[in-house]
Length: 437
Ligand SMILES: NC(=O)C1=CN([C@@H]2O[C@H](COP(=O)(O)OP(=O)(O)OC[C@H]3O[C@@H](n4cnc5c(N)ncnc54)[C@H](OP(=O)(O)O)[C@@H]3O)[C@@H](O)[C@H]2O)C=CC1
Ligand SMILES: N[C@@H](CC=O)C(=O)O
Image 1 (tube, rainbow, N blue to C red):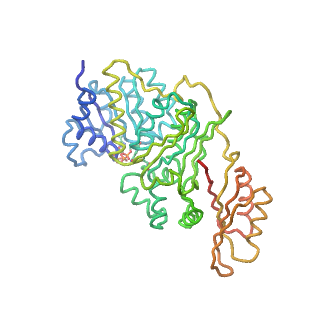
Image 2: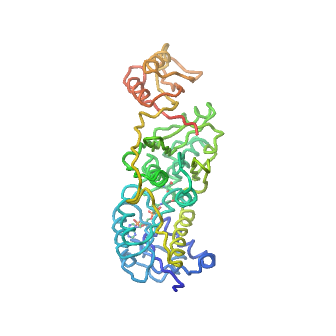
Image 3: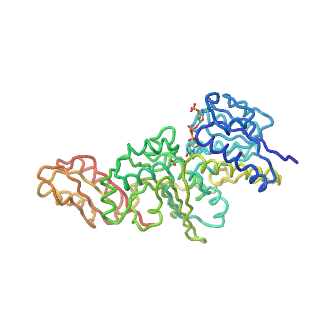
């Protein structure tokens, strides 16, 4: 029986480095737990010759050509950590065709092309590990696939983008606008290569599409996920939310209804005493509601080199154990396989009911509040409370905040469209859903 398993890493950036560090520092720990030595045979990166680092010194083969990993007959597991769609998909598909197990943290690719990739893995009888793709270092994919397997998972609420949560936390604590904080998140290695994926909610949507597909055992086409990011949120909204006893979080929400599912990503107002309100900085949390176990929450660092490296290595260990007992689990992937049982359509965001926070920018002149209230009333929107600044000067453009009672999204959309085109509302209105969890 093999005593050593050879792995090759493609992409030596933030996560690649973390993965190598975990593998080298904890070599003995891993050997004790698996009976195997995990040997990093090759690391490939476009700029490998320019990288100086002590961990890399311990690797024999360093190359700029990913195919030195993919075509190496002695490598058992290929770790794809370059990110993006191309050439990442080709690297993964070619590795699978070469009968290699693959580990990736590439949620963008899996959310869009997961179906092809998992099908190829099944046909070639190899495993595909993707624990690092959601929640950084938090064990959440395995929890969903295995530990919650006896349950009908009904709802998921997730703070699953470390960068966005870090930005919202700094807006709240240091009153900095998001563009200033994004630079810090990038230098800490949290942000995607294209940071608009973080701030516009795309990365969160990739992740919830993966989670909901596994949880609900259905295909969730990424393009059907409603996505709205945090770039419209200003410190003033964070302050108003605080006055209302709430916080603003970028939430991923998935719910299974009788005939459809909801899968959406948007800034969300939640009461400050909710458990998800306590999740700050780069930390992530995923909250599952399932029929037998009831509520569980999984919390930890949602991005960064070592936390994500830890998740990547956990997949390598799972695969190594499968290789050892010769009964590979092939990492069952449920919604991503041909065997998915059902297809649930994704509900239109405008058909979903909730309360709303609406911040209008309007000129301070008599009658404006009642004019706005009048238009809201026309669309059957009842107002729970309104906040207006105490000291303003006539003619000044001021923020006016309304909290509504539960209403259907379409009513709010229509009312806000009308108000944004009126002569008394100035900038685009900020609309934030309020969620009870
Ligand atoms: N950063 C994080 O906290 C997390 C990231 N992820 C995911 O992990 C993956 C990697 O992310 P991250 O480490 O942050 O990204 P980085 O950009 O830091 O690292 C990617 C590395 O891959 C190299 N690379 C790009 N193309 C090739 C190629 N064709 N052959 C060899 N090397 C190549 C890049 O080189 P060059 O710089 O020259 O382009 C770079 O060094 C992504 O899918 C990301 O979404 C998942 C969870 C957390
Ligand atoms: N950019 C992502 C990295 C981890 O998935 C994030 O900030 O969460």
